Every structure is written in C-alpha cells, then in structure tokens.
Length: 295
Image 1 (cartoon, rainbow, N blue to C red):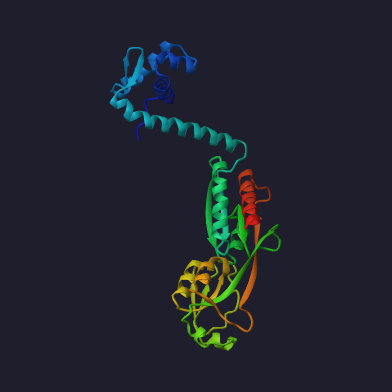
Image 2 (image 1 turned 45 degrees about the vertical axis):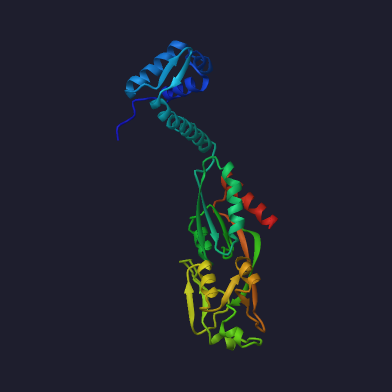
C-alpha cells in the first residue's frame, strides 16, 4: 500500500472552503492567510489531478469530482479527530476494551439496555462479550480472562456482589407424556423420560447442576437451544422463568406438576476481574446495576 501524498490539512482546507462559502471566509475561519488557503487547495487539486472547485462570482462551488470526494473527506477528518480523542482517553487510563463475561441465565434484555446506555459514553472502548454457563464464569475470573463478570459460580475469594436471583422452573410441552399423566409427578416419573440439560462451559472444574436423575439426557450447549428443544416436545427440563415467560403465558410450555422440586433459584453475582478496574469498566458495572434495579 502506497503512502498518501495528501495531508489532512489539505482536506481540512477543502472542507472549510465549501462549508464557509469561499476562500476568504475559509481563511478567516481557519485563522490563516487567504494566500495559504489558495495554495493548499491548488496543491490538492494538482496532486489529485482533478478540479474540485470552481469560482463563480465571489463564491467557490463544487465540481462533480469535488462533490464526489467531499463526503469521503468529511469522513476522513472525523475519523482522524476520533482517533486523536481515543488516544487522549487511553492516556487518561480509559480502557481500549472491556472483556465482559456473562452467565447465559442473565436476562439478555437487561444486558442490552446496559450496553445501549454505555455506547454514547464509551469513548471508543470496545466491549468483548462472552456468554458462559455455570463454572465458565469462574474459569474466566481465575484465569484473568475477564474485566467484568456476571456469574453464579464464582471463587469464594473473589469480591463479588449479589446482582439478582434467577428462578428456574421445570417445564415440558403440553403434549409431553408427563402432562398426559394428569396427576402430581414424582421423581420416578421423571426418570423414565428424556431430560434436557445445559452443558457447563467451564473447563477447569465442570460440574452438573440441579436434578439429573433421568437415565436418558440430551445435553445442549446453550439455554436458547434447551428452550427450543423442550418447546418442540423433545424432553423436559428446568429453564429460567424470565426466558420462557411468553411461552408460559401462551400455554406453549407448561410447568410440570411435581410434588417437590418444581422450582429452584440461583443467585448471579457481579465481580471485577482486576483489583483496580478502569473507568470504562466501572461505568459499565454501574449501568448494569442500574438496569437490574429497574427490573
């Protein structure tokens, strides 16, 4: 790739002439002499090999080529300003990126609302989002692979704060054999049917969670897949109530009438991956807490 021969200053002069309506006006806006403005635009047109402006009376007007290049010039200048601002924010300690690890049971609507509120204030900070299950959050924290973590399974030594409680409810499709029994169910009834469970994404100490007494199990990698599988009548399982609320209201999924164990609850916690989180990580943490408080 050959280096550019045209400077940002030349593009800035070109934009100023268009925006202010002429060479003299651009010179005043840029606090420069009119001769330096004329020279800069002359050199720009010479280097490009095309005419960008035509002077008609006392006003400079765009040629076809000038009109085609003006939009790109504006974009180039805006990106240059943004790049300088990003460097300034980095110099002040603002993070270039936040590694955000979130348990799949955390309500996605809350997360998206927090990220939407963060975007206008991010100062160029990128968010690298990873969804995990069970001990996946603990792995990320212990291995230093996250700056901000939302998880149910976190090391006891971590300084984690309770965030919210998630309710899981045992459900199956209305036509599932367990519902056709039309009576209270015992664990022996569940043992004969296919159970859908979500695989622990952790690698260090993966563990099973909840009741796993069924002889036949389908193991899937995400809660979304578990919801789809159970919705299609291919098994039963415990799913986050907030994630299947619409299906429950429409009768597309029904709670299993268990004598015990129909519902269990788990707490999700919020923790920083670093002892001294940066300002962007702290801001995103505050926005997540705020969304949870409004839920």
